[in-house]
Each structure stands twice: as structure tokens, then as C-alpha cells.
Length: 350
Image 1 (cartoon, rainbow, N blue to C red):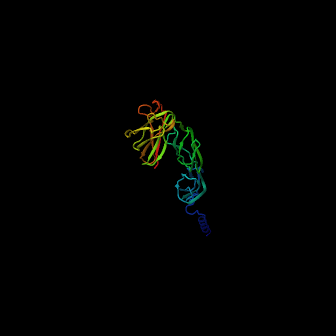
Image 2: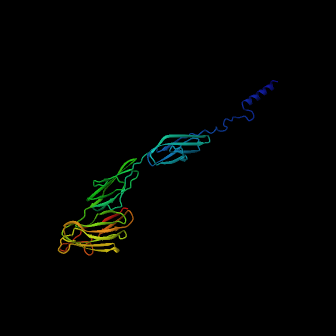
Image 3: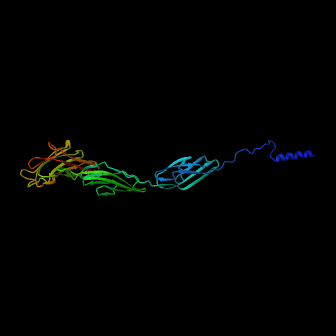
């Protein structure tokens, strides 16, 4: 009876201690349940001027997906452990990362984490016009600056402008520095080109078309004075004018007052539109001395302008002496050497 009771007790003890059946220690059995993810991230750089490229790195634990919102708008911008995003506008941006794994989802947000400052403007200008020439010299400047809102030009001759693409006429000879200062959200920058413009004096005696620059509507008629500068004792002159007959039509010529004495001066005009040429000869009549010594208008030529808007048309004076070129004669019939000739520019403005 005692032995049977002891056997029952031992069996109950073994079952209570878990040792029945297989025996042994199973403390190294199945792994613990999946841990929830923890969203962690860093970025580089954290600040700079726009456009700012930032690299983001997720160091989240227990995560299989990494989803990013780079600007705090609640919209998914990218997925991945290492991603890059470019901020094009200035401002402070909050960044959020959502990490997801088998154990769930975790999100973290860093407020005003990325700080983007405005990028300073870059000042630059150019021109398609000649930067060297006779006075008056007209130059149209082209503003090639970026990230700016206002402009201030210094033409180097005491004149300034706040226009974006100004047109400036240099009326005095010399060499001029040109500077442009532009201002934007990121500050101010100045770009200066030393000795950018060179304006030369007209070398007299000279023929000049005046006005040197003229704006005319397409289809309009206009007049140019053929002037002489720095001349003494001139009694006759011949001037050769070249023009683009596809854009201009010659109309007429009238004598100026320079060679007028007691009677109107003689004027002879030869039009050769096939070679884009107009020849003007004018002189005082026999025994009728000119009324001027010095500068004056010897003739006025009239054209009609045809062409598209914003076309710049050049009218050239042939400076060659002798033959059929431009020349001056004194009261005794001798040649006066022509030292210079200044052409004209006609802009079709509308």
C-alpha cells in the first residue's frame, strides 16, 4: 500500500513540474513576438540657400518601409531608407517619417527641421549693339540677371536708369564703365564691366546723317539731314548714301540752307535702287557764295520705311574720296578731304 502511494505521488510531481512525457529544458524555444518599429531619421544639410538639395537617412528600427513627407503638407513625397529632396523656395520646412514593419507603424515629425534661405541674385548684362563708335552712340543693354526684382544701371557718364533693359545714348566722347546692381529676396549684387563703352569724336571735316537714331512706324515717311561738320570754304559737295531697298523707299531730296547764298543752291539727285544707292550733288550757283562757314545742312533726304516691328535699319554714308564717292569742294574747286562719316540707324518701333 505504501509503495503504490509513493508511485502516484512521483507521477503527480513530474506532471506538475512539466517533466512528463518528453523531459528536458525548452527555454530556447520560439522567438519573442515582433517588436513595433521606431521611426528615427537624420538629414544633411539642415540649412542653405535655395535651391537646397538635402539627403535624408532613416535609421528606424524594426521597419521594412520608410515613407517621407518633406514639407509638412501631409502628402507622401518619397519612399526609401536614403532619399534626396530639393527645396526650391525659401522657408522653414517640417519633415515627417513613417516607419512600418511587421510589428506596426510609427511616425515622427521634426518641426521647422530644414531652413532654406533666399539665394542672392546674380547680376549680368550684355548688348548686341556695338560698344565702340562715334558719338552719339546708342546702346541697348540686355539684363541677363537672375533672381532679382529691381535693377539700377550706372552708364558711367553720369546717367542712371531703373529700366530692366534700358536704351542709352552716349553724347560725349570717352571710355565708360557700366555697372548693374540688382536686388532680390536674397540681397543685392553688382556687376561692373570696366571700359565697356568707348565713344569717339567725329573727325572733321565730316558728313553726318542727323538724327543719328530715329524711331519710325512701319509705312511712315521720315527725313534725315545730311550735315557737314568742321568745314570752312565749302562751295559744293557730293554724298553717296547706301540703304536697304527692301525696307526703305527713296522719296525726294530738298536742298539745305548751308550752301544757300542769294539764290537756292543747285541740287542733283541720282537714285540707283537696284544697288541700294542714292547720290546727292549740291553746290552754290556761279558767283553765289555759300552763306555759312562751319557746320550746316546741305540736303534733306526723305524716305518711306517698310518692314516688321523691332527691325533696326542702317543707312550708310560712303566715306571714300574721289570718283563717285563722297567729297567736298572749296570755292576754288579744290578737294576738301573728308575725314569721317557717321551713319544713321532707323528703328521700326511699331
